Length: 493
RNA sequence: CGGGAUGUAGUUCAGUCCGGUAGAAUACCUGGUUUGGGACCAGGGGGUCGCAGGUUCGAAUCCUGUCAUCCCGACCA
Image (tube, rainbow, N blue to C red; front, side, top):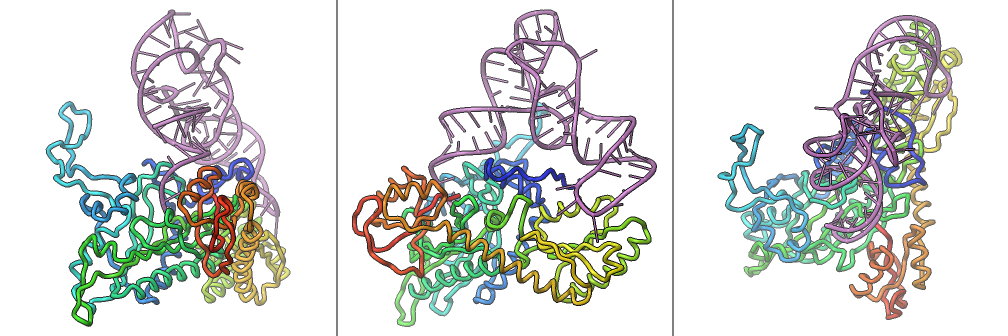
């Protein structure tokens, strides 16, 4: 079925609805017939695939290998690490039976009560437990370390309020799980992966992120430290785009993973885990899109250049086809992904709107006028500017233009975020700024109580203690007690 | 699980207050004319009005129950 295009609701009405509409109209995904799940459509999946490919390369460059662990986890595994079970138990899907049968009254299929599992199985909400019970068998000596594994998988969390890409019940992600002989090495690994994620976000997604450390209340269940990258959406909310956890020896102790070190002493191994998910798609959509639809960074766009012919007769089309064939070939030779859309059942205006809503970075239009003049019309999606250029040397111009667009949307998103990030010293000011959708840098006395009160009163949470920021002492914006440094507050998705 | 709203054609929705043969736009199909920013004309197909009861001569409309979805919270990659 052809895409239905009626233009997007203007963002001012309701950002959430606007976002949903955009995801559906840009043909990225749709709601699945299962609560909280989504169908990722081919166009959306192509973007994820590209992200997958780039990240996977980065992981391998940093010495990691891929592996795969089971979807189902025995219930007892989850209860071994106390904080972990606390963090995940309330949102797990549970497998209780292994067989169906036909109902005796012919009303359809029912769960066979005779096929009840002795121990229920949990559909993984994350794989720390199953992986650590496996690592126990792999690790005996310091010579077995480090173990640097990643897995690409789906996980399931029975979220109360799902949103396309941002929080679905089932989502795709990668989770790295590493085991190390020393604390220092594990901490370095966790920090390194945070940097890998930040680099990917900024260079590939054109998404500015703030690197930081989570406060105790916000960190991953079972971790000693959680390193995060946080981005800003256009409605001023924070989105946690990736996390890297230093797990200390918690999981090693829970799963009894010990090794013999160089001095022949037994010790528990040190661990990290880190992941990014299809939520990155949500971050991408929310960071760059406008009321004409999606704006994709050229480096991740499944179609980087679309060419639309304009013609009246079959002869005209044949002539244009011939001219375009050469252009397509030359662009492809430069590694650019090109689509020539000469479908006859859609008019040019329809195609223009369609590729705009899908965020294709560059559009080339070629008609009889251009054929005669040796020109073509080039439009860039980020600014919607059109220019007529000579055919000669167009390939180099397009290559440069793609780079310009990549850089421009990054700078635009960066400026947008920086304008909306403010330092605040009074609680009144704090409340006003949070209400206006700002990222607020404020002093905090370091207590969970203050954090909880601020959250209750303003819905703002501590997104992170930003890294690489000068740590100037001050007074807590809420209690006036001494504070070592400013931390980042915002409302979040 | 709390607060609000909505279930009618593939989709978006009107009709519900005030009961009387099921509507529009769009999408889809056929034919023709079009094609430099979401084409036009003519014709056509498509809905047991979420589900189950009840009231009534008669229910999309009123009543009761139920299920589902969406938005706002709590939860979260």
